[in-house]
Length: 353
Image 1 (cartoon, rainbow, N blue to C red):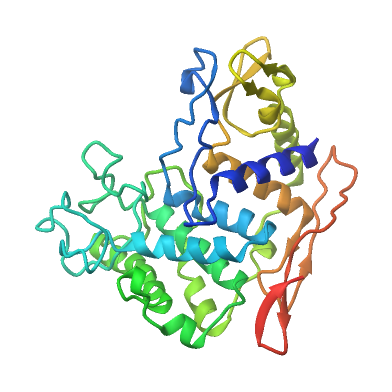
Image 2 (image 1 turned 60 degrees about the vertical axis):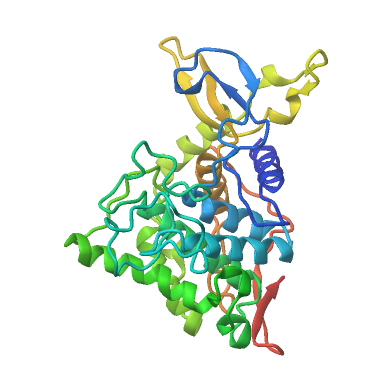
């Protein structure tokens, strides 16, 4: 069952992560939705979050689709797409320096702030009612900013961790900013924000992915190939993990979707195994899935949990680690054709192996 969940959701991510331009949509174009969070209604092909490209999902799409589906065009375009939108929040309205931002009141925006990614990446400032959810005049949503730093670091690694001219040359389609300059700008923002708010922690007011603190660790990796083995720091609470995996399998499968609605031309079988945005569990222990099927923020976290069971860690390709975790009631794992990065001694880069 877990293998069906894995494959169905990877295919779903592949469909909504466009190789041609690097966009990663939160929902599929016609993804089913059931009555929002209240769960009142019926399934309908709505794609309610299709127009949303949220920075908090950068790490999910990059770490899952880029690692598990070999497509160099998608990796490059994702990297550049993120970098273009980094420069929306700035202290001017000059279109030569970033995306159009006529609604940003630059008189309220700190003139010395480095650029950052917003909560609603594809429409910065347009998601929250006032365009503000944190201290600045803009929806900076810092956890999403950190997630995007990590996502583009993963993309860089899977491009072979290139340096030299590729990394330092200005890009005409990214406001003459090199990948290296965008890396510096994005990581400096986190340090700047701590000084600006005079706090010891960075607040995150969106749906957390847990990446903000890790974002600044990736810059040394891009400069010096100094990486960190994340898997070694994870707490092995197997009693809890077993229950969570059981629930993941239980609530991500719906036998009632095993049919085709010929009158509307919808094959609901395509969504039997897709991870839901939520589940309602009633007093009599009956349950049903609600809201968006295939919501990126929920989809990514669940699939990462399955990856952690396999325990394949290529954070440092020069020192591949395999640390499987098999919590009860699982009796074992069988992993085949899992992609990993390995060093290429001839070119001094990384390649898929």
